[in-house]
Image (cartoon, rainbow, N blue to C red):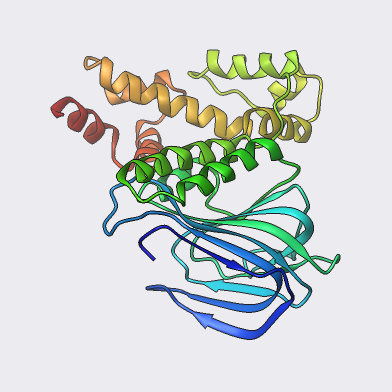
Length: 308
């Protein structure tokens, strides 16, 4: 549906057997058992040029028999549980994942997924469908190419974003489309650090600073954990809670950012020299990692940016 539109289903129990729907490619199966549902469609003209956007979202109160399955669907979705709980099942998961109230579920594209209410027998939730040509790259770099359950997120910050999207669904203009893109970027940033803001303990700030100051040499998790006086598991959990990613991913991302800066601003440095400055003994390994991160080799990245 290309233009903004809202549908409201009345506050009464509704049940319908399984419905099968498709959209281009992929399949969605829905068993309706709900008390209410409100759908919001955003203004999205054909061939939109926004790099990321929310296509639609809905707020619903699922009852016990509700089921939603998807397979080969090419877009990701966000599920936020306001009350009750949600169970997610997939061949890619070792066992059903429980998503309690106050938590958020990220569903990556394509994966076969089944959602149903948790043991309480109901689930009040918000679901957002995302799109945009930059999403696959963001997912790969941020670790959202897999299922993610984010427990006890900052509900106030998330609900403010939902309210922004609700207002945008009432507008049909290019300005609304542009603001949709900006608000979706805010949503993606929130997903990387969705927990209530709190002061980072000094020992973990020092761990992060050590990573930043030692990009040219190996820094092990054991080394960081010892200096932070905690276990490796505790350190990894603390980094994810406070900084949105593990120490390993943080170190890799810092190295790739420095490498891109050196390639652009230091034309006299060879690829091998840049690799050494960001902690890689082997230039081929560095080039493979850089291509995985930026989608092209260091040499092509440098040449293209300088040509531009």
